[in-house]
Picture (cartoon, rainbow, N blue to C red):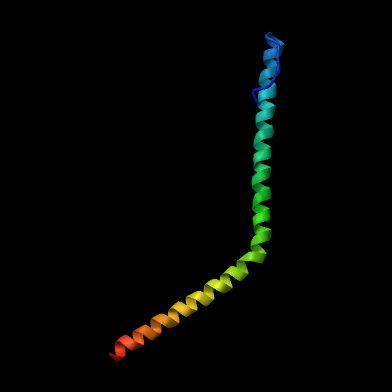
Length: 78
C-alpha cells in the first residue's frame, strides 16, 4: 500500500506505521478469505463433477484391463 499520505513529523510517522500495519492485516485477511472462498467453490463444483470423471475413468480402466487379459490369453495360447 504505497499510496499512504502522511506528514513528516512524529504523529505522521506513527500514522504511517499504523496504516501500514492495518493495511497488511487487511491484505492478509482478504487473501485468506479468497483462499477459503476458492476452496469452498471447488468443493461445491467437485461434488458434481468428480463422480462423472470417476465413472469415465473406471470404464477406460476396465477396457484396458480387458485388453491386457485378451492379449495375455493370446500370448499364452501361442
